[in-house]
Length: 347
Image (cartoon, rainbow, N blue to C red):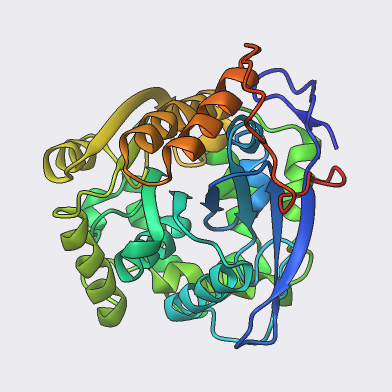
């Protein structure tokens, strides 16, 4: 369906997309994803308390050239909400199972918030299957409370303590009713707010939303999660995997000091200053984010030895055609017989 633009709220024309549910091969729950485009897979991972709806105005840019896949994390969006703990390990296993179920190879990750903890971990543990990482408002290293804005430092200890977290988040739904609008400078429309609230209509449905704050490693706790994040942080400082850092100011997870550390510490990094933004930056600058991802990817795909030159020509051709340029390549089959076009519009 048509979606509102980031600034005006008027309908934005959308190309066809398709929605699918994929059962995990080892866990009997389904993850819902949105797919659009063909080619190399670009996997979008959202955070808390979101769904793949967060990526709706970024996907069309990427899908002009590549295969964009945005998955609802387990317990979020339209994915199943099984009675599990919703721990960090649970989310990571479900994403691993999702990638295996779709047979995704040579993935480029686009990640934010909790999607970054899951995505960076996946890239660290499955480096051979990841071609690059684009990130914004991400957890690049273990966090300390002193790194957070004052209001966040006040809120986090409360929501990480029972029964206050349960009452505020799971019962009171403050993450959607208060946190979402406060961390999105642009005023969301009623339709957008309703779309974000729709997956979490009951207290029970918000179990995953409540658990996420307990899983974030702050000041060394939980210890196991801290070790995981510290591990991928050290890996990020040495891997030559291409990285795109979309920096917003003042940010929440990434403030000025953290941004400076990222630029100094991470090799093979492209940094883009995207201007003003807090946490849910996809709502403030979706077109800019989409355009910068496409520009970065077109450069990175062309500079790497794989895929083959013929595949690179295909990506370039799609990129040119996406910008309205006619390219005469009679011998180039842009969509193979195994790559079917999306069937119907969703979102």
